[in-house]
Amino acid sequence: MPELPEVETIRATLKQAVVGKTIARVDVYYDKIIHGISSKDFQIKLVRQTIRNLDRYGKYLFFILDDYTLISHLRMEGKFFLKSDADPIDKHEHIVFVFTDHTSMRYHDTRKFGTMELVPAGDERKSKSIISLGLEPFNDSFTIAYLQAKIKKSCRPIKSVLLDQTIVCGLGNIYVNEILWRCQINPEMKAFHLTNADWGCLIDASRLVLKQAIAAGGTTVRTYYSSLGVAGRFQNELKVHGKEGKPCAVCQTLIAKIKVGGRGTFYCPTCQKKRNDE
DNA sequence: AAGGGTGTTGAAAG
DNA sequence: GCTTTCAACACCCT
Image (cartoon, rainbow, N blue to C red; front, side, top):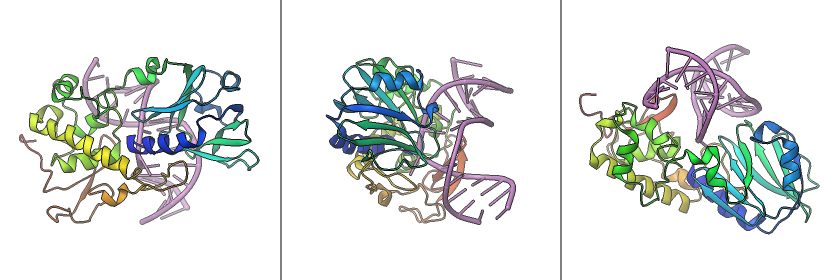
């Protein structure tokens, strides 16, 4: 489900609710979520650990514990809910963290794509999944030069490049569709055909769109709700994502939907024309 | 009513 | 290497 703004919203809301709580027990109902160690080790190591903080990098959540960091990725539909430990277990609740105060934090994931891993405290940036990630758009080092060095002469469509987490981390399908529309760049344009002005626009638009989406509590288009069950509001600001057949906000041309790199892609055929004879 | 689609990502294949 | 395709899974829409 979530991209950077949704994960950030979850981080901020969940933090209020769970920091200071101590894990009494972990119940695992579907162990393929847990990567790197056995679910038994996972359960043993987490007992008596207190949640000290919640952090985030890209779309990854970090639960900072006493001796470990729990790295969680929600993939398409992962969610955390807080319930009493006495509440019945939902069909899609796969990992239940029972706290000493008899509340529980439940990892709910309809499609079971999400992942969790446990690393020693302070080692989260050394984890295999984190180490390969590119910069977040907010990083001062996220520049035209950085992007051009990363893509070199790549013929890949710009949309696929922006979705590649090893190049820039945190963007997903919704926000990439929106960012390309704002910069009037066709999603299928080969990355090496982009001008410096294009790259500069993409950097600025990435920062702006993510910032606005965070301020709006994320985007709820299908199933995303923040952990307290609150819907985001950025769906009201979307210009192209999910708008197939609706008029473009700038030129009234009907928004088109195509597939790029296997992902549904929305764009305005007038505002986002191909260039360089593509 | 089967098949295609879904805020993702990595492994495999070419 | 680099790039594309597909699988992991459940559910919702035609």
